[in-house]
Length: 443
Image (cartoon, rainbow, N blue to C red; front, side, top):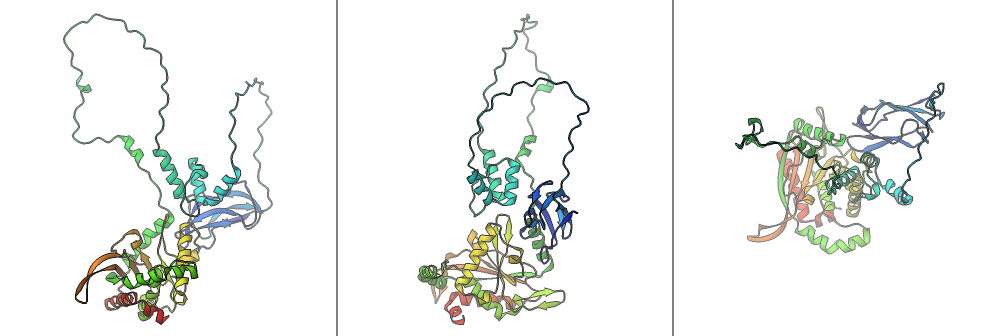
């Protein structure tokens, strides 16, 4: 009796996925709990495993197919029986033909099996698929994270394609046959036919070969969802952005004085994000609507503070959630952010890591952004954008001084947050960041 392999329940608000890669093929023997197929969702990739040991009989949803929860992916036979291919008929005996001797085979260089196995383990399933499609040896692929991703493989393929290829040796050709000489009929030059005269083009002519410089790649499910959600956020929310600037002198002074002791004691670097997360939590407590969400005609006020930290991964932006940020100290915040960022880069985030955030912080300053208007992450109604710290002249106590300044931006849903609250929210964060000892006193 066969067992149906169906799309499992994915996560809250996630009902659709794309079949990314079949890790087993029809006819393969599998063990209980062994991964069969990888599904791509709008947030993370997940694997569907075999409930029992047996043989994968059929594959119903091919790679690239869009599926929803409950759709049939394939069939598994726990008995381990699989139909064997029928043997060719031998009713008619064909006359035997002498087989010519096989040409000598060049010796095959030995392969370091241990090295190849280690490299395979470091590659994601999608990276293995792309490498197989392009005939790439994963041991030759360079990667910066903890695992080889499909983008690393594609980058390797691109580098190989642009590398200069040596020209093949010329093929000797027979000399042309002699042409019999004929007497000239006339010494008068003959004009070439009109069709052979090259006319100057009035505009550039692009050869069809130029099309080879284009590549059509389907958007990943995550990128499609990002695009859809960003458009929806602007169409459904009354989004507005307010700005302010922060003198980062005090925070930078604390980091300079405490960073070595902080690392020695906690094993993690003291960054700016822990200060901002602390300031954000304090501001959210002071202005509850910014930590709320809208559900139809109701407003849901949340008494917990799960802060989303936007991370730019290779496959697209993800926003893992730092749970209960209000209960964490500086070291726990820094450690939690580092862990989420590393898992985002190597693709090991789970769906639970991306759900339930109440407010988001995004730091475009790490990429050099000076000013931006961040887009809301529904159903959240507020997002704080951080930017690059720049030495700028400011007026302080009647004098012009140079200070490390950062622009900050708060995008908010005007349906439940008034402009006054939004401005005061940013002023609250500004006052805490310019006097960070207040956060230490408040705990």
